[in-house]
Image (cartoon, rainbow, N blue to C red; front, side, top):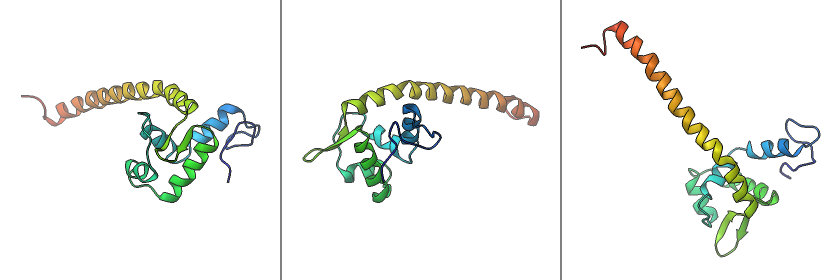
Length: 129
């Protein structure tokens, strides 16, 4: 089974526009996690990747690695293991602003939750001394 490729029909696009093919690929279960575990330019064996990915199913890991190799973002260096290709590293770098955004989002949501908790604490008499 071939993974999503630009120019081919993919989920959400009959035309296979490149961005839609990329979204389809990145939306595959575990794919981003696998990329994230390779972020330090480390070569990882299949077993190491599986352990880093919370012991995911070997069948799913094998399928994702196949799709990632087919897309040219991961390569297998027999003695060293799996690693990101240059285009794979470029893709990971392109995603880093999303990581920063998500960290800001988390802080914003935590502040919002704390602000919503304070009025509730006053109504019940908690939090005031």
